[in-house]
Image (tube, rainbow, N blue to C red; front, side, top):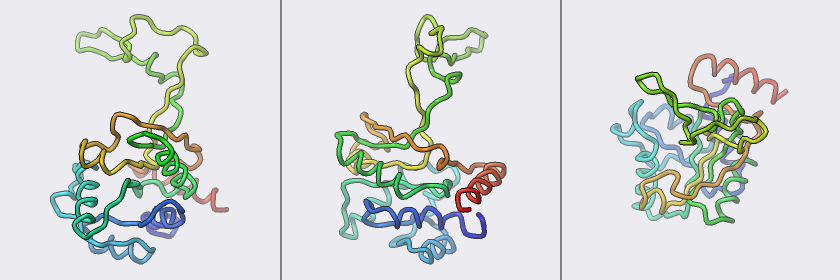
Length: 209
């Protein structure tokens, strides 16, 4: 990504964040582990192979990290999950999410973006096999005017901050009380495809110019 490993951007943002105590990389790949160390991440353990499949959910990976660290004598009140698919992430947004969690009774804080009005849940319909439609919120009638739609947001995947007890006791990355931090869309990216890679690299060049 722009002449550097994609992972480097996330590690550097984490290291620049004032609110994070440690920056730990979870991976089963020795080469990725070495890249992480090169840019300043800690790799105190290797992830088991059975938690490194393409279909492995995120929750057991985070659980493994927390429990392994606990076995090493290190326990934390919360964990900040930073996936390397967003090289545009800012340390300031990490700190804002951590501070929002610390100053609230929320189980977790996630970065979010506004949902365009045409995709608002009050205007979205579920479709049945028979062809009938029902409003996703369960309402019997749609809201007619765009101006009357309640604000809606969606998680953008840049930052997740969750209390440790929510992960280990409730087996959830979110819990029952979630707070959202509205991120600037300029710094939001989620690389899943080659097209995502190309467009994000262009945006990264613009930001760094």
